[in-house]
Amino acid sequence: MSVIEDPWQHEYIDTNGIRLHYVTQGEGPLMLMLHGFPEFWYSWRHQIPEFAKYYKVIALDLRGYNDSDKPKDQSAYVMNEFVRDVEGVIQGLGYDTCILVGHDWGGAIAWNFAYAHPEMVERLIILNLPHPAKFTQALSTPQQMLRSWYILFFQIPFLPEVLLQSSDYLVIETALKSMAVDKSAFTRSDIEAYKNAAAKRGALTAMLNYYRNFSQQKMFNEDWRVLEVPTLMIWGENDTALGKELTYGTELYVRDFQIKYIPNCSHWVQQEQPALVNQYMGEFLGTSSV
Image (cartoon, rainbow, N blue to C red; front, side):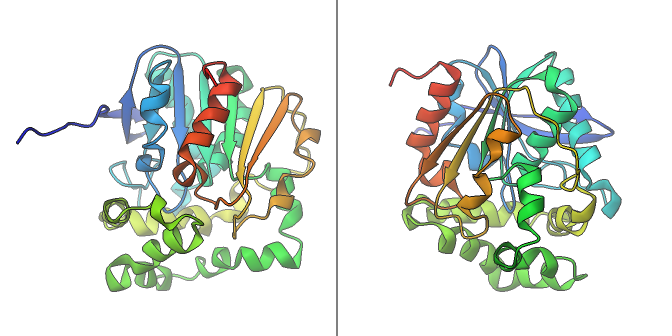
């Protein structure tokens, strides 16, 4: 029986004093993809081959995740370090600019990177993560505080790790499948891939350290200037963690802004509705034939 190999390659790159793992496919201008919690590069499995037709696609494992380095100090998981990681990846690959794509925590990093280095971002694509100014405003409302209860829970030492790994990482499976509108978007092998990534030594604490440093993550800048980078936001409307209302008014913070809502779709938008996400991304980038 012949074995069908994945179309992408696994590589490593040294940046900002650590080594990051990534998956790559294609040649051309750089498209850099940043995943969220509790995921890893695999959350872009439906986008990598599509955009490898036009770009050198790089889907990172963020620091602390899967096969990337996992610094032990909690202080290593702050936005300044994440931004420096991305800067080093772009430069280390021999590029000056990229198409930057981010979902969830990857979206937060992408927003902050675009503000810190707008000259390095040709176009910005954000999936189900509000502009930091909008998120800051929302966290003062009871509705969003209830939706974001897990952020407070994750501040507790040790207990979240115990819960997340109990019963064969059942919480991770539940988070992925219970939030999804289309449960079939996650196969058994998909779930196992996420569990295996979280089970790697040091990964759970590293992943949680993003939240344990939440107050330091540059979400709370009171003076967000207007971003000049052309930006597309794609939003699954049935996100139970981040309400659709968090997208309203984003155009006040971005000069050239487009938004595409996807109904009957959860927070896991690029995995649950990959064809639509790929279409909207392609239209924004001028690669779509639709």
